[in-house]
Structure formats: structure tokens, C-alpha cells
Image 1 (cartoon, rainbow, N blue to C red):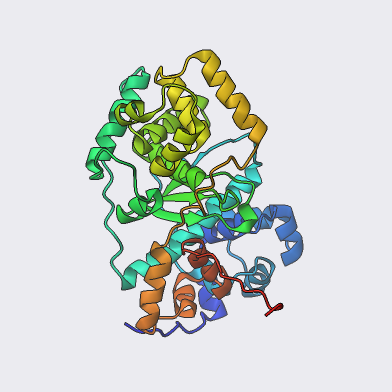
Image 2: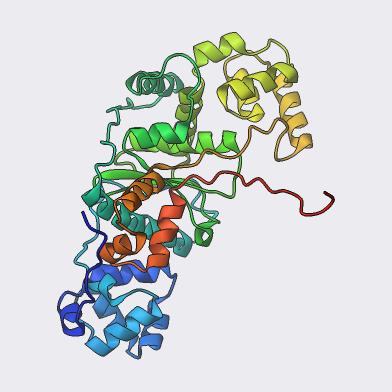
Length: 372
């Protein structure tokens, strides 16, 4: 194992090894339209489209201008990395809240991350993918979703109590979890398969532990239940939310623990115990028949008055850590981030963005500088 980087690819070799898909990937990540790219590299819009479709190859000079315009090394376009095979579509939480360009950029970030994961996998054996095989009957009833969530808990080795750390549970079973970078801050949590691994992306702007746990479990629901389904359906979103709720807090246990009346002191205790929000607890209480309609409405009205974030902060969001720990271990073996970036054909700064997105960031202790 070495930390050496590959020598630069000669211009003629880069042209010969030009990978059209890499051009589309870089353009989507930079959120650049084809006509804007064509203007910056000095070719017609038709020529830029032909490069991306694999119908023509750029000259060495055009390839150099392309790399400059898209802030990628020439090696990125000649790394010989085809598009990762994907068995399904990305499941975005809300298609209406984001533009197609924003979703394309988020998916492109996932593929960039996949490149880094592929390189890391050459040096380290990452956790094996171990997800249960689950199927929902048609038509799907609420009790069916609860039943498969119970099966999933057993398959993950969970007992009747709370999930200790939802994000770590996914990582331990081979799912790659990352926080979305600032460039994708408008995109909610989503999941997608890249190559042979599923990836889950969480929005770090929601620095709320209960929300991060629910988002992770929601995306797990999509991965387990909606293998071939076309994303965007509100029915699928409701199924994934129902799965997440049941996965994090099984109905039999929760029904026994919920207070018979709207006792927020007790609900705060349950919020800390199960790691889910007060809103989720009130909703589940109504769904399980513990709270009548008027009690449910009163609870939701009070929570709306209290606003967001709701009372009873659980602390910072759950964060991924797998890739960060892997890169730290490689660093001890003198495999640098720069060498990983070179092997993936990426700028070192972009590789660091990926690694940072999959690393745990602990709160800093800040001391006052005056008054001592």
C-alpha cells in the first residue's frame, strides 16, 4: 500500500481515453448548462452535446479548456470510470421544492462520492452490504408497513427498545451515509444506489437529532421497500414515513408507554428515550388510538404555537463517520487524501468535501478570551 499519486495523463492519451459520462457528471455538479459550457470552451453548443453523448472527442486544447471551465483535472475525464450501474431511481423527499438542476447536482455529488468510495475500497474492506429482503403486498395496508418494519428490526438485530444510533446502524450494514454539501442545501434527504451500494444523503441544515434519525430511517424505508418504484409518489413517501416511525418506535412498546392524556412532561421523557420528536409522538398517539381527535388537535396546536425547534432539544444531529474513519486509517498507512483524489481523478478539494460530508464533526468548546 502506497500513498503515491499517478503521473499526469498526457494530453493525447487523455483525449484517447475521454469518458463522455464524466463530462456530463462534471457539468451537473457545477450546475452549468451545455450552452454556457460551449461558450467557455470555445465550441458550438452542438459540439458540446456531441462530446457528452460520445459522438465526438474534444481536441487536447478543448479538453484543457473544459477542465479549466469545470474546475476538474484533465485526468477526471480520462480516468476510465463509467457511470455506476443503478438498479433504481433516486428518491427525493419533495420534487416540487427543488429544481431539476438542484436534484441533478445532488445526484452528481453522490456519484463523485461513489468514486471516492471505490478508491477507498481498493485499500480497505468496507462493511459488507447486509440489508434484509422485504416485500410489501399489493395493495399496501398500514398494518403491512408495520409488519415489515418489525421484520426489519429483527433482521438488524434490534430488540424491543430504541435504535441507539440510526445513522451508525446503516453504516454498519454497508450503507454509505453522507451529509449534503452546502451547494445542495435546498435538497432534502434522499437515497440512491450507486454501483453495488446504496447511499443515503442527509441535510445538515436540519441540526436536529430527532429529525436526522427520522430522515435516516425514512430513506432506509425507500431502500428496503421501493426497489423498482418510480420516485415522487406521495404514496411511497407516506409508506417510507410510516416505516420509519415504526422502525424507530414499535407500536406495541410505544402504545404501552404513551400517557393516556396529553402529559408533555411524560412525552418529553419518551422523546429522550426513543429519539423521536414530540410531534411524532402526538401523531403516533392519535394513530394508535391513544388520543382522540380533539386531544390530537390540541397537541398539534400547542406544538405549532411553540414553533421550531420544538422544546426538549436532544442535541446535535446524528452524523456519519465511516468514510472519515476509513481515510484516517489510510492516513496512518501514508495514503493521503491527495493520493485518493488523484486515483479518483478528482481535485483534492472536492475529495476533501466528500470525506468531510461523511465524517463526524463534534461541537467545539469555545472559551471566552476576556474577563479572567
